[in-house]
Image (tube, rainbow, N blue to C red; front, side, top):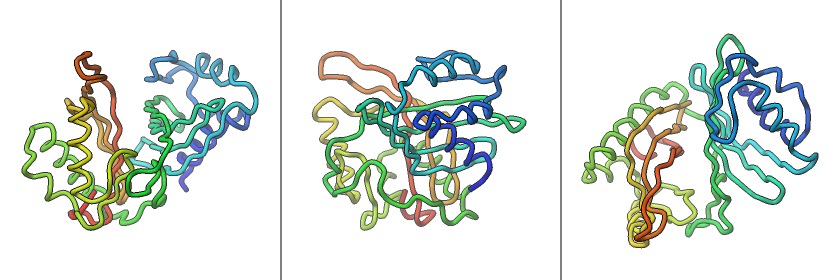
Length: 239
């Protein structure tokens, strides 16, 4: 566990514990906040932190990884009974946190068709020497996805071992394709428009992208920032 990873975990945990020390990990003057409900700087963050009634928040960081100056985490939150799964990204500069991005999704009430939750599975990165290879693989995948080269998709997956944590999609390549078709049929398919960041540590890679999803058939569409998690057990076999 690196120093910056530990600081991020302590900071996320502080919303549950009420420990104010992790606020000192934030640069009070340079902190940039990309959560649309919060302003920049430490004051806005501290006000949100203090506004939470004691015991109203539970935070369990399941995974934490580091890529250069960025730490990215996968956390189970419960806000007064409102359960969410979050991806957070924190950027460090001169030893302080200076920028933050996040994306939260409502925790699924049931496991996936193959019995997986949104957060189970391996939690520690392996194959640390293959970080750049795995990131390059996912960049190629995203490029093919954005360019609509769907004929290349099967080559990125090991259909026999591919595990899917999307609550509505089963394991395996056939499960993935069936799940995507089902989402499209009910007007919930996502069209990816742009990939902003590809972060990785070993066999875990996180993609930050933007896409458009039809909210309800015939009722228009909305743009959203998307974070998708990939675990590459074998650099060129699956993700």
